[in-house]
Image (tube, rainbow, N blue to C red; front, side, top):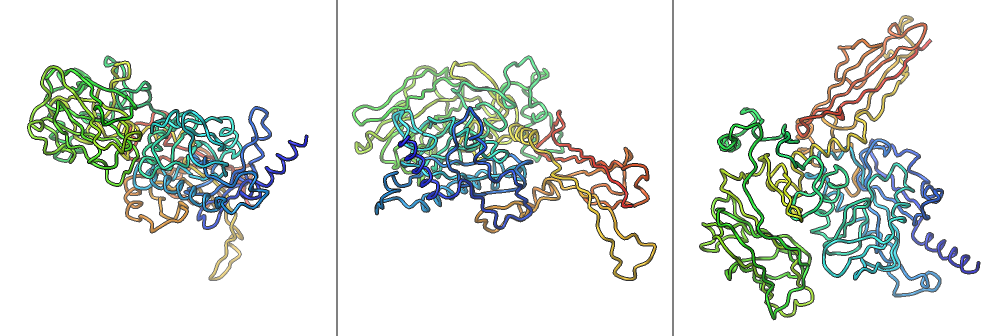
Length: 614
């Protein structure tokens, strides 16, 4: 009993120091009406018998486009942001970490991530359908656990070992309770670990770290799994599903409406027309486009620490029938070019680390052979390897650690070799949609829509391919209605010139409020914490590429005179004397990012009954 009482007192002190259980900063929220169901919800999870009490949450808006009841809400939950020890809550400790400083860092990390994935790329076009929030909770310890042991943090984030790979959570029930406590304000929880290096996970909870370079990349990729949802596009995975996966060549291509072959000549610039001509020559007269010619003769995920005593060398076999190839690998703990040499058959491939990376993990591509449209800087100037493919037979790929001081930190995470046909056999041009082979961890083949246009294949790419982006629109609009509200207003009819007996004392107005897409997009329609100068040209360009069609009807009869108007005035004579008139509004949204809408997600309809004023 005494222990329970002490814990209760300590919990109360923690709550007092960390702030109210829920603190929503609503200052400067233009056009956003925060509704009552996002207030006082922290006790909600506590009322559910299968969930523990949620941790104290201090909630801050990051990017808010509208009411949570008609938006998809993403919430960043803090983990590993330290406070003083429980002892220090009772006794002053001059070495105690400043809670406000940690909270500010978390909010800035979350805001940076939200802006990175929604500003001018990835989720930019669908931004009006989404809200981003930060939910802060203090931790007893800082950072992410290692060696399979979580630290004393709300959600217990940890790494299996020390490798920069997955970050797991030890307390999913606590994370579930935290999200549930926020009601409609939490659709996709994101556990944000206070760690500056690569790591993350997908699933029920998206897990990321505050890594400046890798955090946004992992967030985009994992949200692709969670929201759209789709599987991988990179080679060596085990989950290939969703709109970007094709398994049976005897069936129609799922993204047939995006195939470059299917577009009209008028939709292409000169470069795209030339690609189309090439492709037509290789269609072989059947109903499906051919599979692009490529193979993956070698792939490993060693997650091994490198040492200077012996290089890490792997052997693979090439058929010798491909004119170009790609050496792809990922490394961590190697900030300088003088730390490592990457060799193929004893030749230095000229690897250079990403500028400003430090010891974080990064993915590298070195394009070799003949026929590439563009060559990475890292693969340039390597002599004879620039103009020929791999010869038939065995080859060796080696990673040679040069700096002994990097031992214990320098790590080879992954490596693979991909071989490709000529540009006539394998179209590598960005923007081309076809049927590209992907090889699983069991060497099973599935097919993806583009070469490397998509962040589901190349995590360093900031955008989805057209197929995944269309899937994103469908997924979000399956949760969100295009019409935020339909209201009837009774307004006084004030004649400012000369009131007459014939003029009605009031008028009835019906107003529809669509989500701010197309012609209703504006830089003021979305609140952003610490917003800088708005991107007016970008917003205008989006608005001009989209359209809303608005059709009104009364008792089933279309009112052509009100087409594309958001506000209509109802004449008293139009309202029935014996009962209400039923007014309906149909909204159709169009965007070049959606070509097929089989389930009608880009349409919405609302009806309302209107009585006369008398």
